[in-house]
Image (cartoon, rainbow, N blue to C red; front, side):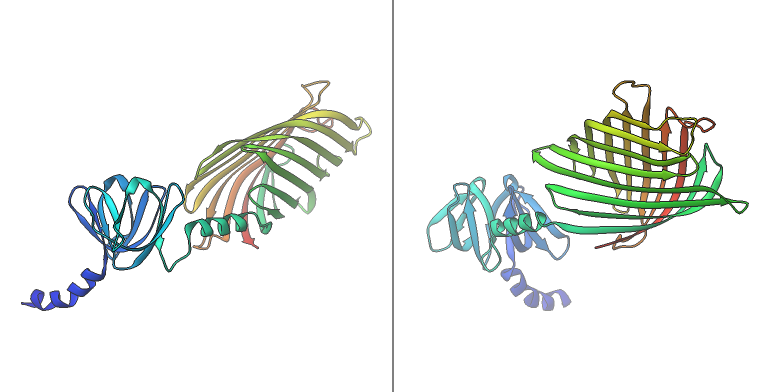
Length: 346
């Protein structure tokens, strides 16, 4: 008895809803949002947004005025209604179209998908600033076994085609009230895409490390970068180019370095979950005259978002430098692990 009383109230809503009939005979009631890339999107009250491939659609009907664009870019407006043999018909016009011909379909009162795509592309080409401020709890093995604190600021300015990246970091560690780590780093990286997956890049890194008796270590590189993988969750790029190494050391027993070199690198990022990601960067910088004299750098970290907005993160990583020709009495490998609290802001 209660069901019979409810049906008269639900019937007008059902009649006013859009209908999509599937080839297996089932019918989806809801609100048609649009059609693009061969998929019709309908918003339902029970399952949210559903995408239906046009190959699975038998017929479509709606009491709302729609606009559609064919593959040949002709556009039509009107109310759509049921039609047989996988055709969409414009009411009172006598015009019918196969679903395979339809490039876009949208509510006539909303914005044309081509205009939305153009607006999105224009926004993606705007140069935007992004910043990240991090505070580290660090450890070291190799030249020292200690704990310390650090700070790092990352800033980037870019769009889909080119970008600048800047970083500045400082790490200080003491042991028995004696400073044993006092390291400052600064770097700038620029890349500009000029053809599909290819970009050219320029980068420089400056470093001062009292523990390693390095007053100034500078590397500059210029070359090409290839975006090897650009999937939704995984991105990998490799680079190669010419470089220059300069080292001014605090030890009189070792000559300063000023040599041409090569630069090879690998950048990898993997979004494992919505809140969890893995990032890694490797650099190999050998001298041109003697490949056994080289620098090898790495920074691999696991990044976990701490809130829904993902502007607070924990970055736990392992970073280090291998110098094949260190100052006498120092080890080749200087390896540091860190736990960094990061705040992202624009």
